Length: 112
Length: 115
Image 1: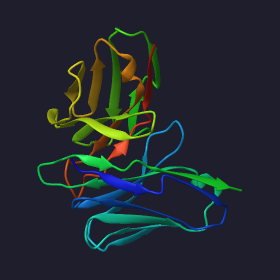
Image 2: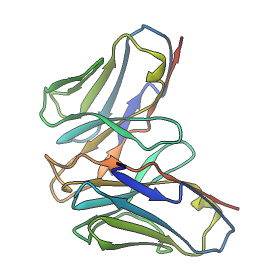
Image 3: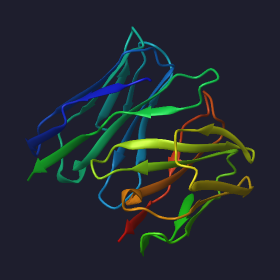
């Protein structure tokens, strides 16, 4: 089945630093989504990407849909303590396969 | 207003019992999902319903049975609970199962603990 490799698994950074995480896939995706999960909560959508090469920002967050359609990255600039959480990438292949495949998550810790 | 809600938030029960988790969405979406998140935080799809019709049924024990009485509700019934069923179960919904309106919105989760 389809697999998403998300890296890094965890990051420990200082407040104010920039962060980058990425996902790669063995197959093509038509949609890339980035979610954040706070402890005890469900994942919340951050950014949705629908076209190869698309670069989209949401405040301090920027995500890109890779040209090959097999990868995506998420950048967080000037991190703050409330950025702490687990970030998930997710890919949707479309067609008759309606399944959203999730990466294993990146645990982000921000030291004030 | 809560977009996707689940009850209960916590569920502790004995092995062998039968339990249900309820999910409701007020977004007017046509598609609803159940996911299981294990102790390593890995999220995996279990079921998906579109307009009350089952469209995804992953390799899940038949002890798990989803029921969709209407488009706004997707309940999960679990028979003969086992220790390995302990996890956080998330309900989600989207307008459609495919792009461009396939963005999924998640509920707060139900933490199931089987003793």
